[in-house]
Amino acid sequence: MTSVKIKRTSLCGLSFLLGLALASSCRADDYHPGQGLRAGDFLVSGYANVVAESPQGSPAQLSIDDLSLFVSGRVNRWLNPFLETEVSSATLLQSGDAAIDRGHFVMERFYDDIGLSAEDTLRVGKILAPVGDWNLIHAAPLVPTTTRPLTTQRGFSEYANGLSWLRDPGPGAGPDWQIYWQPGREWLPKPASIAPEHFR
Image (tube, helix red, strand yellow):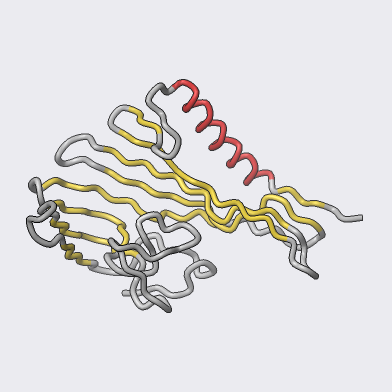
């Protein structure tokens, strides 16, 4: 007989987020799947990556590889916050008596955009680095894009923490570019079990 362990905290959190999304979408006239939910000056969205596996000789399990929440705001020239949080590698169901992985809560990004001009933006906080192992939606499977390159073997830091100046002159008006400065170590780094390498 095979026993199945259930991780209640993960199930409660997942149920809460799914319930919130469904309840919000039912009463929001302007909600469209894949576009997020608008609440005043803020947009709330997210995704989940659920994995079921039953390897030979190992316990079968159902886990959440990623459960991400995005909140972005467009308030005024000075206040345009963005937040991305994630729960990763959390086991929901598992057969046998093996230990259940509780998962990790990670603050992926948290920054504010200040509009210096129509072309220039000053970004302050924890941001994605201009190059690295990610793309605009850095969920599995990771694929290269034309707007963000991919590197191999973690050749660059995934995150920058500090200030970034972004310039986007618009189509045909010249190249867009980004300069960033990170005065110290990464803020709120991922646990070593997820990201064993950290950069300065």
